[in-house]
Length: 455
Image (cartoon, rainbow, N blue to C red):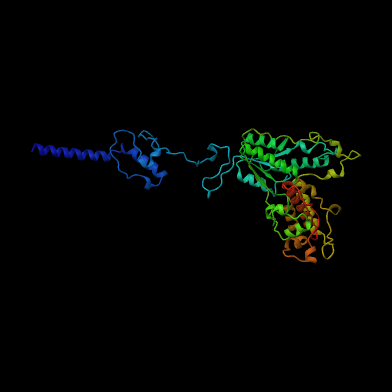
């Protein structure tokens, strides 16, 4: 009896202990906490079965399937479990440690990560509208640094004793740069202006703001191509990417039906090959831009004067001391767009007084000329925007050029508007200059006007 009663008491005590173990949550809290944390981080089929034993201490042993996490321990005193690995995604990307190289997403299908900062080098593209270089940098980056350099090598006397840049051209350029700065400031940005060699100035700016890339439009002349090569070389040493764009011609370089090395050396052959090509749409001007980065305390700088560039300001005055006629052309995108609109309206208002075959189309405008070449040369206007504006305002004048798809003679062949002819000539000279500026051939075939085909 005594033995039976003792066994009964022992069994009853054992049942009470088991009940207390299941009802007492203290030993289970750390285990439950780590289970919830791991299930939020890795799939449930990687977790071991939820079988728990009475713990003799406050620390748990991590299962071997996730031994890489075993250097962490959890106690019942922790108020909230922490992540067991460092995540590459942050709620605020700006709090992440930034690297010197451009950021790229680990998932190719995901959205591209923004660059820390991008430098945009303005050259002969002093405009906001139809500027793929500026628009791409603004879309790709957290902050954008527009820069214009007055290169001392472009001023002073040439070996022949003439000004490399005359006072009229320099005045027009200064006005264009000032207008560009105003347009950038109106959109929340600014223009950094420096006097110095671009390869030195751009490197200094890029290092000051920690830029990931330099954006620029390609140019065509030998010296301009050499400048691009120098900049690419110094940026490569600093791990800064150089991104090139094309925006100085009516037809895009990538749309040509031939490789640039195989470009015809005569205008007639060039015209015949590009006839019927589509002109790319213009890029709308940005309404708002990314601001300058706070890092580096970058000062925008002052726009130099003619004297700063080594030119005599009095040379722009006539003999009577008044402003010369050439100085009445005001530089800048704002003035260029206004002149383009006025010219388009004037063309639309006047009938075509040319011959039936269109070969003697009148050139409307002041002194029978559009007088838009200076703004095209500085890049205050793009050829595409000029073509687009005239197409909208005076479509009857250029319909023959824009709709011609097949070859032929007579009125359908010669009815192309004079303006498209001029823009095609401009394209020919820019493409042929680029071809021979980058070619490594020792012998060159001369470029001619109409050899092999009628102009």
